[in-house]
Image (cartoon, each protein chain N blue to C red):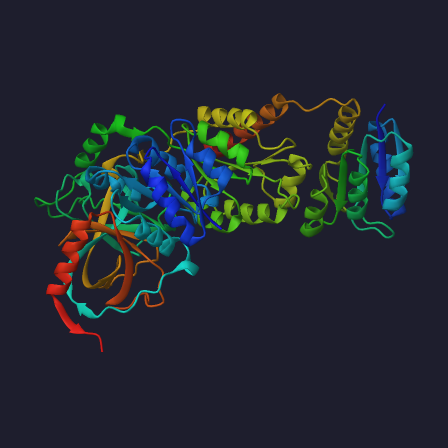
Length: 151
Length: 461
């Protein structure tokens, strides 16, 4: 069972997201600002959060800062208008899983599937082994070789 | 309180140092090379001055070079204690690897300490009274420089002096015993395997199809033969890898590990961005953990430089809570791998060996730090004016930065380390310089004093 939390102050956007992501999560919870999101996180077993950066009452930055302060290590995907690099760097300090750009939700399913899988792994308290990083490193090396080979 | 570390086997020298240290608010620590590694001691004590024995150059040259490649020791003064004149003559190899001063046993330890402080600490400068007489003695001053890497097209020259379009020097790979003038094609800041201020890319002027040939024409075969004959003497390391960390326990392990690649260790971004283009590293390992929390602004600065490279390197970020994909999007740099663990040797060496296994070797061959043929001198005519205590005053047309080291071969043999002084205007004809004389015997210094006094032209008003 994988549970998803969507946080955004735009109601229509939340409904659209819920509709798109329904096939990928067992249960979907929604909140309209960071404070509501925190309350849901404390009560429910959430495996992944998708959260807007700019919101009233409690912004995405304040949200993730508080989430980490409470020791909750859930993957958080942020979506916002791209180009806001300062805010992106700010949330990255507390551990961002990925970023998606508004209003185009390209790749949202892929990102959320990865986020849910990662959240499930963290829930099972399985540590990432060195082999995982070596495998990721290998993929990156191959990408470089392909790129240099094309030059 | 200043810290001086003596890492050597002499029993009397530390006693002399300790006696002088009392006058200078300096604490002396001693390390035994048989029991302790110099790198471990330096990382533990963070000394201001390090004195090593010149007796075991094979290991010490590389150790000093490695320490100087870490930016935490950028301002540390390294001096070599020479027990014999033979060790003194071998001193140039130390001077091209990060040592700034050669001290011969038996000379005044008080002067040695004062001279080190003069070079190392601006605030400890001793006021040199103006000389009673000025002389004008012609001499030749060779700026200590080093060949770094070579291929059949040219070589990299590391030096402190500012050059423009060409350089005149003795280049053994040209097969010419005399000085040759070679064109410079590019300049970058910093040295790769020396602490010098600049690296110049120099090309061999091979003749074109229409060129007039004569006995001084340089042919590619000459250089290629030199490289081939020297093949097994080149340094096996060909790749540059950069590490950003302040973790001293990791650095201790890195030193023991560093036979495979050239490492440059940075603690902040300002100096890194100046050197990165020349280094063209294959990978950068970035330790995000600092005492004040993760520093993403430093990352941003570094990545800005990496994007300008022809072949941007992989960037492995340790100690981050964010995922690789998130960081790739923030910085718009696809070659990022984010690792949650702190920087540690096991994973680090796995990444390094995989990279070295797959990545092509670079074309240039590097000369070993201990290779005598690595050293060269860029000769300049100078006018010697005076010698007060060990401070030599002279005039020279070229622009030499503070702390540059030069060798006198005429009319005496010795070294001088330029000291920062308000009277060294740069770029002016016949600019005045002062430097600490070292690397010579007492008899040698007396000879200079005699030459200067015999040639005294005028008395100070």
